Length: 228
Image (tube, rainbow, N blue to C red; front, side, top):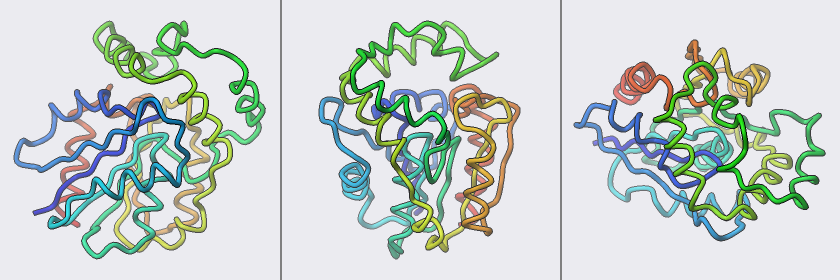
């Protein structure tokens, strides 16, 4: 049996996967990984958390959403014998907006109560923004320390998994939102340049693809898992 392992966005809770989980075939085995909400852990430490969550006896397809793309890439590069495929969703191998690196330094000193940030849901969800998804976003962020969120934002500014991406040999699928206002198309093109075997699945949707288009993305991912 193949298990789909879901690595969450920057909040690290996995709460935002609920619409996507509800859209998946119940027969598909799924593991949702969560990161410690009160510990400022970098990518290497979170990689260890993700690795420990992998099922011991099943074949695995790992999905890294947004912030967790570099973690999913690093796992796939390890050549784990039971890892059959890699899914990257609205994510990156290296800092997707290098010209905005100064934001990482600013975030070190500015309080960031993300649940109160005006317009955050519109940035993440665009025209798919809705009260239900806004509540889901608020719940996702409410349990995470603002200091941890700042730390993770700075980690994004410094990350570069390009070398490890070039070592990935398993089938790879990249889900991209044409209306993504967070991760630009250049990030997807960089992934494909480093791993030419990557298949691209574009959607007319925002950064929060799994939340805004759960059934559409579930269908594509289920087909990918079945083929791995």
